[in-house]
Image (cartoon, rainbow, N blue to C red; front, side):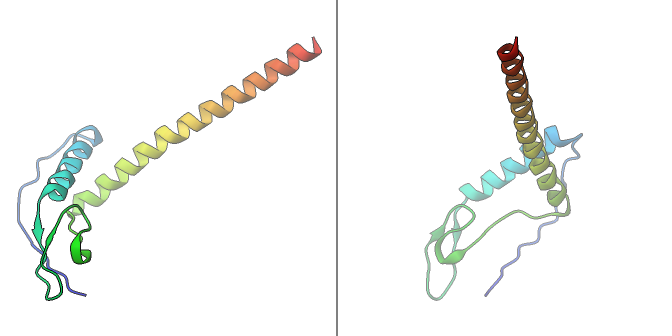
Length: 105
């Protein structure tokens, strides 16, 4: 297994919260997935697009802040999904209770 690491010192803009840094992180991911990276391997020499391409090449952004941003993105998605499931469950309980009351009334 061979790893090529490109280190680049750059200034990351300070964001005020997840509403700003999650879209910025996703834009960086999209730009990387749209870029063509040349596979320099003795068995394969084709272009790899997206995060996993020819020859098993995987390209992704990584920084200290990205791990926290990824966590924020996952938590936000899980929160919305879980709230939707909980509200759906409560609606079913309410309808069941109403039908039981009407059946005995």
